Image (cartoon, rainbow, N blue to C red; front, side, top):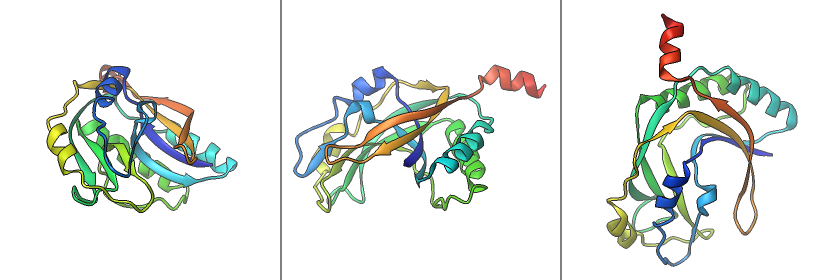
Length: 187
């Protein structure tokens, strides 16, 4: 079972993202129902690990925060893109949640990659090995911006890769504390 932690997007933001696709060679747009912000990719895990992963995530104490999506770009470059993304502007809460999750999961010896956290929403991918020129798409969509939205929960997902695209299943949800309740418990 392949696992990852992610943030889901409100329907209003998904509707805005649904307006981004343009016809591009070798590119497959991610269905809006699958759009998410990956907090931590875990990879293949067996059932006993899933229980430990869920317990580790359940111990995280983090506060709800606001996100705003803005700008677009391509990995690894705009002229030889293999993935198209939308950027994320966040309060400190996103980085704090990612760090807490990584630290909690690190104790489980899952072989997590220690690489910089670059929050983004992947909206399109090229077919295996293909690259596309994304400069026109970036130029047309560079001013993309969503309204700020509240993130009050993060989720553990399993993914099943299929030729038609990934199928995601939510395995668990973890609420984040409201700002006021965190301040009251600390006081």
